[in-house]
Figure (spheres, rainbow over the protein chains, first blue to last red):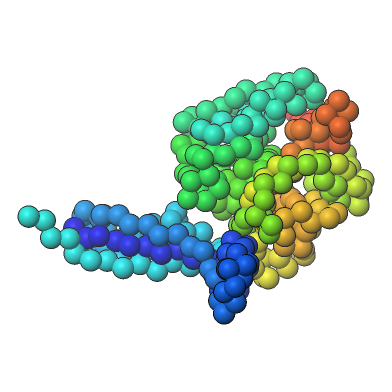
Length: 85
Length: 227
């Protein structure tokens, strides 16, 4: 059993309107040294038994088909073993 | 001619579409629930606007995995007309029936107002009743209509004449002012503006009605040849 943490962000070069708006808000707080703000999504879940032999294969399939939209988004993920008592 | 209006949880323009087809176009139309799996009895499939599954994850993402979607894909593959409006367009993008993706509007606001569209291609089954380069008035109502695609996709859209509607004044930051595109074959149209909200002068414009009339006319012509 593993805990999976998935991070989805807009691809580099894809203009991020939300990031831009946050930068503007920061500049009204007189914080002007922040650039390239990107807003993304964080998802986590427990993967019990892998349907495929390989956890990564299943996670990547999930990321590519549903959790992210590969046209505009990139994803990365981390896994950690969950030890149950 | 028989139309199907697919109803997802959170669809909210299904009734407007139903009204446009039954009362303004004068053709047969049924609501088809997202749990259904068969579209064999229909001549055209319409995916309405709204907020399917509350726009969770991404607009249209969850709906694109509904039980009905394999039938919609099969329907599109067979060459019959599929029209996705607003959230319906987003579902078609997520399902891979049309290229590209939607982002939040440039100004991050929900935009709800009539806009002018330019008909960029009137040689489709959806637009044959319009003049080329005609300006028509149709309302938009969306927060995520900022169409995005890579350069290769944009080039192929242009080369194949798949850009059917452009905004006269871009309201949302959409790439190349794109308001509506078809697939390569030309039988699947996705558009952010709402033609079903522009089917009678009482609504401010009847320009949207000709889109449905185009579908009907082309269906009649095709059926006259084959039967």
